[in-house]
Image (tube, rainbow, N blue to C red):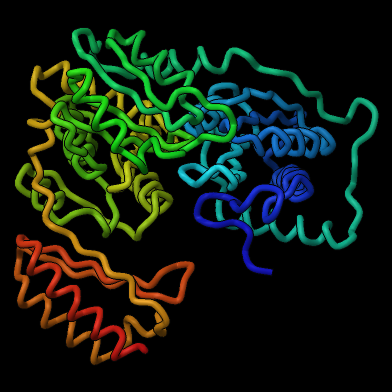
Length: 452
């Protein structure tokens, strides 16, 4: 059996890859593994369970709740809330476990399960491996040790989650948003209730789109992966900026008043300078992945901010931040982690802080984002090659060295084996788009020749 847990929990097509039986079994396994690890020592454990609005989340939530309660865990059902809200409530309520049902930016037929440990932090890899092993052991016939009588878990709806989370967000803001007009694209997702509430209470005049989830329309032509509607709405309404979330609202992309996209690298640039002004950017350092635009790196160098780069994936950004105590990190895709106030990417918090910077400075988002210039970036996927030889092929190393000499200090080359497919991703940045395309094409041919 392949590993169930990926970089962001267990994910697949609901009722095909991810079934009610699997959701129940993984939840029981998680309860047993955490009990064996001593996480529940001396008390009856409590779990916070939330979901995004997908139709499949209804039966998967029921399965997770049943599994946890059958294993002796009391359950607080918080309903439809963003992933960062479930993580926050897991910590704020002193729960021993958090569970979020969401497939993030994926299309509606998918769903996923993500577990949080006490404090709202992602489970360690070894615990996920143990949960998977225990689940498989019992799926194939080993009986569970089940509590009875008063030992079973109790289930109740926790309706205060929205208010607690919104209050938390507002408490983080350094200043109000009075005078700003903001368009919010909620992706018909988990933030459709909390995000407009938070922005309104912070003082902004808001226009909402993608804020009518029906269980079937999540991420459908809207949200952070489809910005055209937001761009048009910002211009149409004469707004100061637009904010887009994905289905579970752990990411944020933005649009300036002219309808131009402001990506995760630019958002990180704006927030890094704002946090340094408030002495909140510890070690004057920001963490990002190797896929961040070279323009971001050059801007941080110019501003005297140190950049630490990690492998692709917000989990690696978070690991680096936690290990060294850094306060800000994120990805070009809009996952932004502000570790003093969130244990995961939080799209609503990111959008609020970005808008707060606009309000505080009186400058447009376009002006603020111009601190970095996005260099042209070309990405080519080269399929059907031996990706395991990317780092060992002498011919490929020579081709990369030649490309790097041609690009000099104003360009960059990155070859990255796909984590899920038999292909190699060729990424080239250069000051000129034609040069980037030319170099990327030659490198793609070199990859085919050396690894094909």
